[in-house]
Length: 476
Length: 83
Image 1 (tube, each protein chain N blue to C red):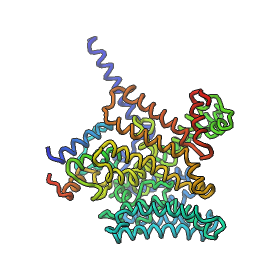
Image 2: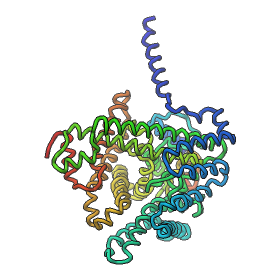
Image 3: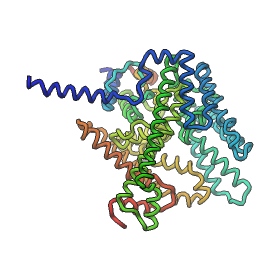
């Protein structure tokens, strides 16, 4: 009898652990056939739309227009791709019309960006065997770099200076979306331009990084029948609820950290360090860690609300942020933290490099491709995104000012490379050695890296190093 | 072992490495569904290059080309590699 006792105890512990693992704050509604059946009825669709609209009211001021668009997607799913384009154009021009500062000027700049995208796409599809047809993305990014170079070389007194910069600013918000449609130009089932246009800053929202990538990805993840649409929409409502919960938690977090405990924001701690009046080292740690977790919360809320909306339109897109703190490697964290940005770097920089160069040496091939993506691609993306710095400081000044983020990219690429090379070893067993310890180390790495990543480009690299050393109570 | 069986075994290993022991059929989406990531895609690309001699720099590459066993089978047959 006694011999069996520990076994039973272990079994019951395992049972509790399994139940804890299965526990969900928001239940898996899409796993219940009755709920899925109800979501396919007219009443069910209205309930889902009403719930989603009410939830979206917390996130966007144009929630009513958004809900009306989503109602069209729900009741006319056969015209989904066309509706994406119509809704995107509506949310590009009609919905924000009142907020445009120079209405027709803004409209013409956006239309010019879209037309250029159309021209790039048309040329790539028309001449697939030409030099351009084989490297359309390279040509696009080179043209974009040339545009920035031209704008920064023109004297400010010239009349062309203002319009060129303005166009560069608008085009910078479209460049990666156009890039995704160019990646699609060789596909056998390629979408026509009118559908590609729907993926250019789609109505469900995006940063400069295309959320849910491009048209190719959309046609592969769209719901094929009523049941799939119901499941996707249930997942949309769940994700939006999750975003709301995280939003509320984030407010509580901000209140507790910044008001109740009085921990200063990271930027303030860094500014005080630059002024040679640093806060105590342990307060700097608290400030850095709070900023790091605050960043994750903020990215979760933004990403979840956008992807929820995309799912509500019938596209079963993957989440942008998914359990980043459970990552056991640096590469895994990068994948889980900002999925669509990582995908952008992989699609535009990693694969093209990996598939072409250093094929004979497996390790060199991997490391070179990681540096092409996480270092060069990452730096190029952010340098081209923050055009205001180039406009204000000039090209050389902006590059000098960019030193901290360049260093960040370099360390990130090194970290991912080491992680990928080490990843080939089997993971140790047990929760502490297999999960807790590696996850803590990964979070620690990214937390420290944030000293260089959370930069407003105001200070020299040496100031960031001074702050880093102060964290370890070393005052340089 | 034929090539597809070898690919299947490799995919099982990749999934197991991510703690995913769910079964998959020939048509199951592995990358677009998020069960495997682009890091795993790189490993699979290397395997297909070595096993089947596919040159993705020539054919072009998209994760949907290796998203399922069916897709990989199609890729191998289009590349003219005997099973």
